[in-house]
Structures are given as C-alpha cells and as structure tokens.
Amino acid sequence: MNKIITIYLLILSTTVFAQRNDTQASLYNIGLGSLTGGIGAVINKKPNEKLGRVLVKGLWQGALGGYAIFESKRLVRLIHKNNELGFAWPSKIVNAAGTSIVENAAANRNFWEKWHINYGFNRFELSVKDSVHFHYKIMPVALVFTIGVAIQTKFELGKTLQSGQFMFSSNTKRWEETNSIGIAYPGNIVYKSGQEHMNNLLSHEIIHMYQFNDINGINAYLDKPSAALSKKSTLFKKVNDWVYFDFNHIIQLYLHGLEGNDNAWYYDNYYEHEAGYYSNTLHD
Image 1 (cartoon, rainbow, N blue to C red):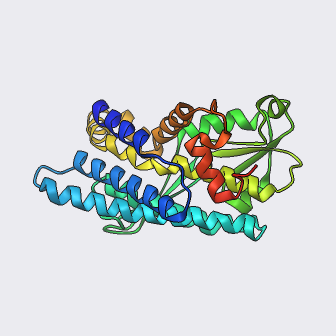
Image 2 (tube, rainbow, N blue to C red):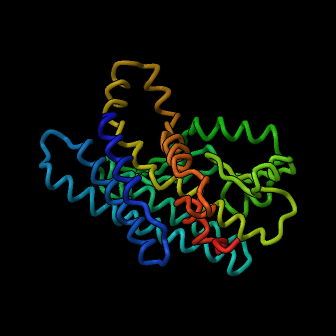
C-alpha cells in the first residue's frame, strides 16, 4: 500500500505544470481525477471483477469528477468578477460533486452512489445506492487545525455563511513577517483584517481549499484495510462510523511545502500559481 501511494505522489509531482489557460487547467484536473480514480479502483477491485474493466471504469469516472472540479474552480472567478462572495456556494457544490465522483471511482463504486460535502471539519454524506441514507462524520485533521486557528483569531460568521468555508481574521504581526495576507489550513481560511480587494484574496484561498479536495480520493485507497480492521475491532468500527480520516489534508500540506516558495517568483510554486490563476492575483 505504501508503495502504491508513493508511486502516486511521484507521478503527481512530475505531471503538475503552471496553468496558463483553461485548456491546460482542465487537462490537469481531468488527468489528476482519472489517475486517482484508476489507481484506487484497481486497489479496491473485488476478486470476481476483471482488472481491465475496473481500471477503465475508474479512469473515466475519475476523469468525469476531475472535469467537475475544474468547472468549480472556474466558478470561483465569479466571486472577484462580480465582487460577490455568495458565488462561492455554487462553486462549492460543484466542487463537492466532482470530489464525490472521484472518491467513488477510487473506491470502485458507481459514480452516483455516494455524495459528500465538507464544511470546516464537518463532512456530510448522502448514500443513494439502495436507499437514501444521510450520515455525519468529523474530519480529525481539519478539526485540530480549526481549534488551533480559533484560539488565536476572530471567527468571521458572516463570511463563513456566505462562502461555505470557515473564515477567521487576524491582525497578527506574522502577516508582515511572512509577507502574506491570507492562508488556507485544513478546514479553514485565515486572512489579515482590513484588506482591499478582499474577494480576490478570498478567491485565492478558496482555490487552496479545493486543492485539499483534489486528492481526497486517495483516502479510499485505505478502504480495504479499514474494513478489515472494523471486522476485528468493535472500537475501531464505532470510530470509523463517525470519523472520516482526512489523510488528504496531510498529503496536500506536504506537497505544497515540497514545491516551496524559495524561487525568484512567488508563483513559481505550482499551487500558488493555480490559486492566482483562478483568482486574478498572478500579477500581485
């Protein structure tokens, strides 16, 4: 399993490129979704299923989800173009749909079987395969980061409701020390109070939130060992019923740090370039 995840990360790190137009942007998101879905589908293949059929299904369903994710990022542009943060919600819903499709592909499910949407550290699931079933889960990594942020900053209820993202503001000196005005953590966004062009800033950080979701499907790679452990341990089963292990947050933080910001231009970092591309902040 560790080897498979390592190979996935190596492929991902060698296929990212600066997005200069929507064609490149769409190909990146479709390719990433397809890769995530294809690998996961093979990992979660049932013994009686044919490898080729499972792989193809995972690839095309993952590509479908990747395209939806791309469209959700394009919708983020409406926030700064129309100077209206409320456009974040349509984008968030489309992003959740795309992420759900990729996750279903990676879990070797039909693309429509399970849907989810995240709000801060909260995950809301809707299963529709045999009967409609709603379920709530906590994402522990996002919860830890949210607690850490909440005790140091001001919670912005209005922007949280408008955007569909947990929003916090702060006037800490760290903004000057790091030459920044906003940052996205697992589950939440923190920004410097009193900024001009606020919707450009928040658009930028919302894209970072979507980048955490981009590799959400990798969590499904552990479905089989998780199911096996649930059969052996009643305690783990109970925990697994209420906790969604959001390893994607840890991996994305690692990948972002791997890109670094030590280059001549801040946007040489792929993830910053993508956020700038959709939020019209590349020139800043």
